[in-house]
Image 1 (cartoon, helix red, strand yellow):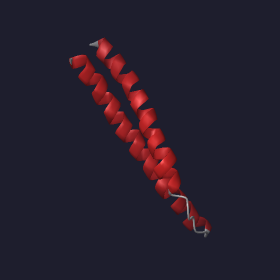
Image 2 (cartoon, rainbow, N blue to C red):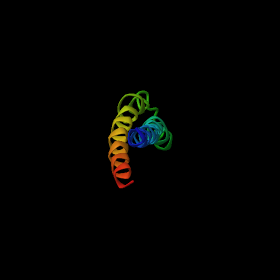
Image 3 (spheres, one colour):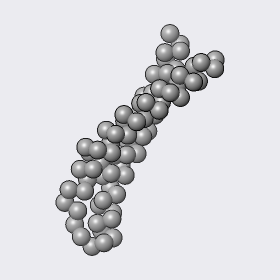
Image 4 (cartoon, rainbow, N blue to C red):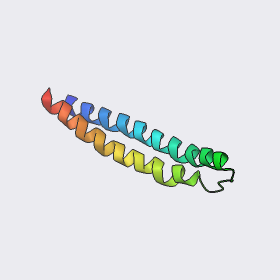
Length: 75
């Protein structure tokens, strides 16, 4: 049971970390680029909401599960 808790902890933590990072970069990145260029990005934040945020959560869960499995196996 302790092994499962270690794997789940790494899985959830990494999913939040990469999902949050993907959301922030995808949401605010197009806005900042649009301000620097001088145009107005109407649909730029949708990348963070629909693509990079959920993609980061899925990728983070997978990477966290692999890291957690390796850490739990070494104990």
